[in-house]
Image (cartoon, rainbow, N blue to C red; front, side, top):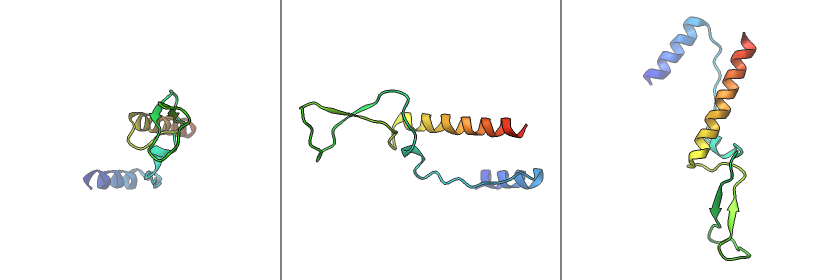
Length: 85
């Protein structure tokens, strides 16, 4: 709460525009840049034994998920900063 109060105080002092961001499902919507495979989940039928699934998007809990989200957020913030110059 201390950090939030500090940020709100700075926004008030410097007349910054505040925006809210909901990130509950942010880790589920970023496409992967590298190939990631996982074992077929129980309940799904596979045509061959030992078959795996190739993921197209990140899953919550993967190391790649937080890294990809941070890369997307950093790019967005950088572009916003460049547009405001």
